[in-house]
Length: 194
Image (cartoon, rainbow, N blue to C red; front, side):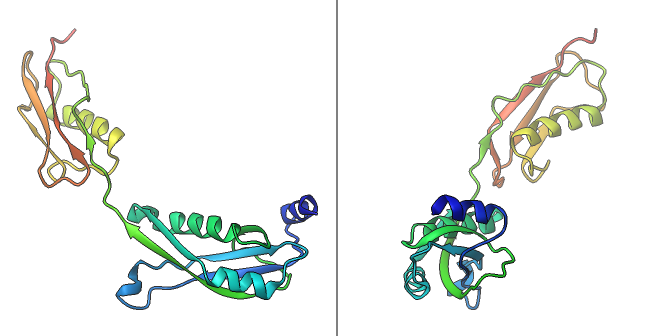
């Protein structure tokens, strides 16, 4: 029967469905609660009221980066509701013509700061005669490969860079103390132009 329900679900048909709504942000204590709409398909023998009561008792938590809050909360809610006896499947809310019911499940989300990445291993080749703007762009591109949102002066500084590079110049790129994205430093020794 589960296989049949799986096939029906694949075509947008359900034997019975429900919508779970995860609490919204109403006050300071609830600022970390995330609202997620779900469609829950019940197994054939499941009693809607029993499944609904079991879902209402759930405590769902998720932890991760603030930028991933909605996706992580949704994944946590789907996983937890999917463990409830009588639930055949759980997905993000979909339009359905089947019988459904509303339910509130709380997902407490704890934001954590992004982990800083080290720039110590960055290697860049700079040749004599390159313009300051070109070298700055090379550095920015390499730093963004490991920390996409890193910004010069906010996250790192460049010292020793002249308007035009000269062989044996040493350019230092160092993470700022206040950077929330990167740590460390690396140096570039300008090589002879070919």
